[in-house]
Amino acid sequence: KAHVYAPSELVASHLQSKYNLKVAVIRPPLFCESIAQDVDLPTNIPNRFFIHFGQLMKRKGSDFLAETLVEVWKRQPDLKMVWCGKSHYNSIEKWTNLWGTYAQNVIFTGPLEKNILYPILKKAEFAVLPSLVDNLPNTAIESLIFRIPVITTKNSSIDEIVEHNKSGYLVSQGDIQSLSDLMIKAWNQELEVRSGFDYTPKIMEQMAPEIAVSNLLKFASKKALIV
Image (tube, rainbow, N blue to C red; front, side):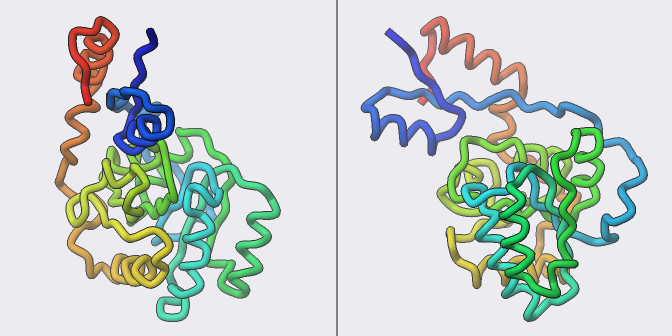
């Protein structure tokens, strides 16, 4: 008989309801693939920016963010972003057409190796990751490791990592007004949580490598079922 586990409560709940499975929740180990060394950033990286990275696609909230930026720039025309990751060319064309003259406020880097991505992430003031649904994304985990607060969405699994007003901020999915308001406040440094925040989300304790491995071994040996 197979034993099933998932990295997030959202995925576990989905599998339980869809396939009538008993699913454990075991958090993955927390680690960085590379050290964010101080390096010279590409010359087109702005002095101030928010970052959106990972897979640039609808499910990851890229379309939602693109539409929100239209509203953001009506009130905050100087807000700049760096988008790092893989996307379809026609998606970038769609977004830049939507933004018009403000398209110059977004730098697309394409996919980056971690030794280049992490220094850029480390310089960002906020990570904006408004996924529609996710597994338990490395983008949010990596952001918190470097003490970059995350603006994200409720009921996406990222809200299991990011604690509102402690390590970032949560908005309802599709709520362009709330997301734009948060981004503008963050840009004007009107929010309590800022880059370099001093707080460790509780979930990070479960993701400490020794605890994550121990939980997995216990689950495999049937000594404990984490639900």
